Structures are given as structure tokens and as C-alpha cells.
Image 1 (cartoon, rainbow, N blue to C red):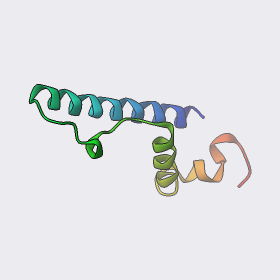
Image 2 (image 1 turned 45 degrees about the vertical axis):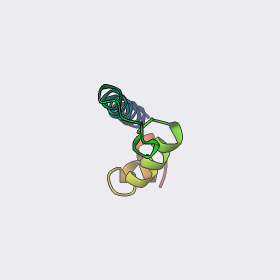
Image 3 (image 1 turned 90 degrees about the vertical axis):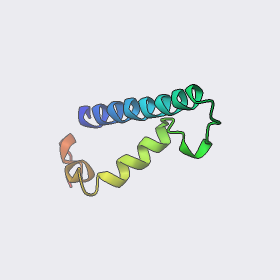
Image 4 (image 1 turned 120 degrees about the horizontal axis):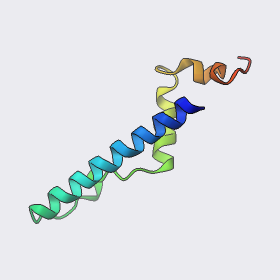
Length: 71
């Protein structure tokens, strides 16, 4: 459980930082913000990311072995 929480927290912080940097860059250079380039973190986005990587990078999580469950 801690593995998933820590992963999600780290991803949230990275996405928030990237979004803030983009917004600050646009404000500093008087540019319009392109909605397609925003990187606002969201629970749904993180869930999709986790589901896509747990097949390859976290196979134990996919099988439930990290929680002591049976496969």
C-alpha cells in the first residue's frame, strides 16, 4: 500500500510542478495558456498511469502479492 501511495504522491508533485512551471512561463512571457499543454494532476489521470505501468513495472502489485493476497 505504501508503494502505491508514495508513487502517487511523487507523480502528483511532479505533475503539479510541471503545470506550475508552464503557467509561470506563459505569464512571464505574456503567452496565452494552451489548455492541451496543461499538466494539472488528477486522481483519474494517476489511476490510468498506475494501471498502465503496473503490468510492466509493478507486476507484484498486479498479482496482489504486495498485500499478501493470493494470485
